[in-house]
Image 1 (tube, rainbow, N blue to C red):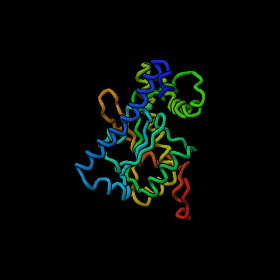
Image 2 (image 1 turned 180 degrees about the vertical axis):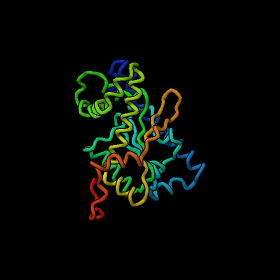
Image 3 (image 1 turned 90 degrees about the vertical axis):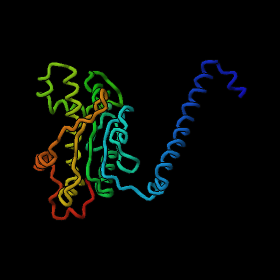
Image 4 (image 1 turned 120 degrees about the horizontal axis):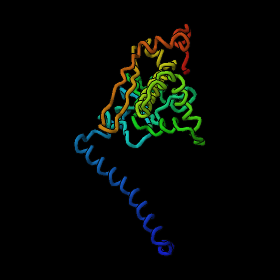
Length: 239
Ligand SMILES: [Zn+2]
């Protein structure tokens, strides 16, 4: 206490604010537990019994896009992975492990990639600047631009071009999911999961379905990325 009093006033104010903003979460948590228990006394007993979500959601880490909330889903209903600009890099062990677990163990029926307009990650990738450790991550978005260069260059309006790159980045993330053995094999055996591409619009809160033709996309990648037809594939648990 004596030490705190010796601090300048502005430091004491910050320190008090930080303590309160941390404590607020625990207060919120207690209220949430009360409200859940009131509407369903078995809620936490069911949660602790295990999970069988129907959906895997891969979205941007942006704080304005809360996965469960925008889908109206409760705890236990969606398996969630988030990173900057909802990327699915082929060698990212994190997202690949999430997809593998969700498909092979949770048997999710739908995999959703959800981007959002005004995505800072996509904006940064369109900016010609050295962003340090973010460079290799954002390079994946620059690669999306390169793949769709003709279409994007033909859009004169910068805002429209930015929006379209956000959509195409979602499409390419979907394509990378479809390239995995887990998805190809599960779809061949079970007819699921289906991969969907969505974009969330912060202006009105609505989700836009990009209506990706999953079957056509799967057919399209098979020539080069087919991992579902080897005779001994059932022994395989790779990606
Ligand atoms: Zn974003």
